[in-house]
Length: 266
Image 1 (cartoon, helix red, strand yellow):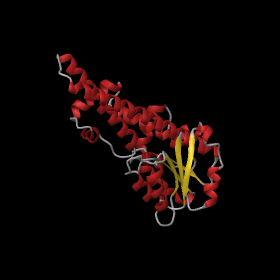
Image 2 (cartoon, helix red, strand yellow):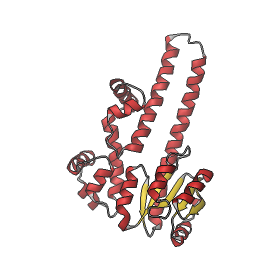
Image 3 (cartoon, one colour):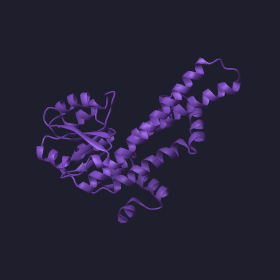
Image 4 (cartoon, helix red, strand yellow):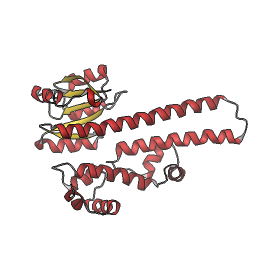
């Protein structure tokens, strides 16, 4: 089960969320709650929750500060923001820092379940990827201890290392899609030249770096457009596009409809 921790300075909100759904039957375990960021950070270090639902405006330490500090921990959790309509600018800032999603208060059961399902899938995919990377690393270490008998064996080790780096690149893209990412940025983070990275990325994924990043952004854009209260220009900014007109152009190219037309179908 995935461990969940709630942070809010209003006890009735905490109680509402705790009793809103049958947590265990959906694969989650409530591990505790806190009324401010400082108290929460102490508990997070000890309990190591997988998911944190946190208010933004709280005494002592606010939600944004909590996210920034907790994200640096070895066991960095996924965050879901609890936001009031008047706090939406704060929620936008949090989303730009890699927060998974946000919920408007008072929290609705259907919305909560939908967001939890999304974060659960994200964590499961990440865990599978990390497991595969660990397995690949173990194989690489074993191969490095062996005396390579021919070029074929050496080539096999190189392929495993390349795949490891591509997986790392994809993880970075899925985490930082809202930022201004470039081929140069990602290739440098996986310690490969731009041209070589571009070549092996296309071979491994069947898509170019640009197309892959665009698909990630468009998938997130569809999720955000389905949420009430978000303007198209806000969604553009949250998915890495500083120019809303260009965002609309890319969205139409990928989906066959404009953002407005997409919203009308919901």
